[in-house]
Every structure is written in structure tokens, then in C-alpha cells.
Image (cartoon, rainbow, N blue to C red; front, side):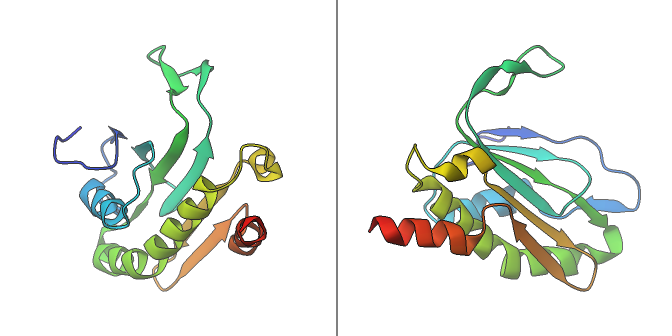
Length: 155
């Protein structure tokens, strides 16, 4: 992990298949989180699949990875950045920066203010954004409206 990272605490990045590239860089995501003034635990994993997928997990020492260490060592956001064809890299990164990351930050903020006894924790709040080369689709398991209305009722 780079000493230059401000928010992301853990990064796992395998090699990418030829002709593919990751939808975001570690530095792009870290800079966006830092500019948003968010400092939760964030573990970043690069893989295939959705352009950006995340879920909030509570620490669980019972779930062990291949190395025998806990997969979820801390309460926080576990984020996965997927791949896009290399020819779509610039378009995908721009679309994700403009359309996805602001919604991702909004979702993170809403999740962070949920009370510990909220029923939304039973749903395991999840965020998923895909990029098909022409458009971006965002789905949140705990919707913005539901999370926002829960937050507004508490104010």
C-alpha cells in the first residue's frame, strides 16, 4: 500500500487480463474520498465485475481469507473496482468520476449516520455501479431514498 494514500487502508490488486483495465485507480478513489472529508475504514480490492461495488461490513474474525487472516478485520467499507475494456478506459473513468462517485459518497455518508439498531443493517447496505461503454447504472441495496428518509426522521 502506498504511503501517499489518505483514506484507503488496504489494497489488493491482481494483474488484469490483456485488453482490460481497471475502471478506477487507487489514487482516484482515495483522492475523491479525501476531498469528501470521509475517513472510515476502506479496504479496496480490484477484480472483475461491476465498475464499482461496495458494502458496509462489521468486523468478523470468523471469516478467514486464503492467508488465514480475517476478510473483514474492521467495521467499514469493502470496495471492489472492476474492469472495463482498455478502449473504454477514458470514457469509463470520466463517467464514474462524474456520475458514480458523488452518489457513492452520498451513500457512504447515509450509511455512516445509521444508528446501530437500524433495521438497514440487516440488509447489509450495498452499492453497485456498472458501466456498459455507453451509460452508467447505479443500484443501492438500501436505496438513497430509504436511507435518506431514515436519516431525516432522526433529525
